Length: 428
Image 1 (cartoon, rainbow, N blue to C red):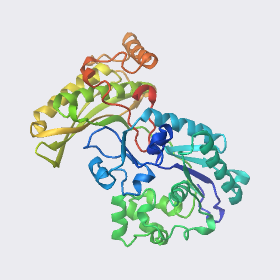
Image 2 (image 1 turned 30 degrees about the vertical axis):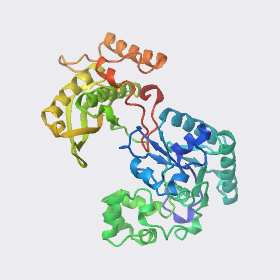
Image 3 (image 1 turned 135 degrees about the vertical axis):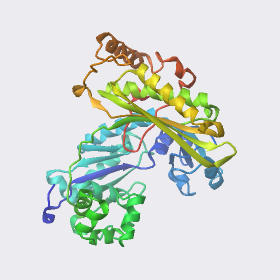
Image 4 (image 1 turned 30 degrees about the horizontal axis):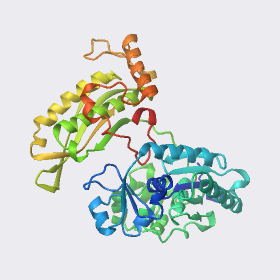
């Protein structure tokens, strides 16, 4: 980071794939090209779109639009079920391709990446030429439906902002001498890092636009953000460069919207067992031990789908990676859910589980006492877990599994979070 504003130069080329999930579907399924498309996690009228093609967006359909509402807005819309493994494969191809043209500094999400501009490539004309080369390569190698918007700017924050300013297939430069004029007219909520809650806090002190955010003194932003994040925002909106930070993994988990035929206690529990086994395998692959586990259920009133509620509970234990112990813990937590009577009057809509209190394997301390679970310090037990993982990796995700998840083997497929690329081997 530098605090000398006179040293600000173009350092970021930010690539954003437009309507990514829908675009991949249109690329892989020619019959969908040119049509309004909504991508959903599960084929059900009660589901919601997790992506919409630009043809669908023209009808007002966006992420979060319910299927029924989407059909009302656009009777001819094609509703397709998400295929996360294909989206990950296309993502990996995209990163490898773009990295041959400009070094990929960081993968921000499955449809966004930041390339680093160095040396003479920081000259605006050269950076723009590099952006056009990326666009041509994506079109030629990944397909005509895979369009990208590119933002060129002094840092990640402004690069992402620039990439959002012209969609689809846009190219926007925010040069140092265009700060803040290039984005002064935007709402403060257009700035990455300003969510709805922060937007309300900023509005309370009279900051509703990007220009007002730029004009605000550092001390005010420090106060509104409650710490150094406000100081960083003061710098970043002026173009000061902050290198990507290593993110500590604090938790690991999965959630899933239940298909209609599994919206009952038994179905919800079977999906949770499947999610728990996937998370345990992922935990071992990433080299962590967990010290707590939580379970949550989101429900809807059986007689009125507009009334929603939820229930969550958790348990703490000694450091472990053992799938069998996690499933035993899940059974105890699920008993608490059932005793709460939340499922007596409500129908489960989605379930999720999280491992937390993660300890890297290098810092793992075996228990001094006889733990209720098999501790992975036992070489034979550790070898058993590794063998289970190897078999499922080599022969398929459901080759070996615990019987409790039998009813949901293919009902908890891979999901893609906004900022995390799933591991196909452990989450498929």
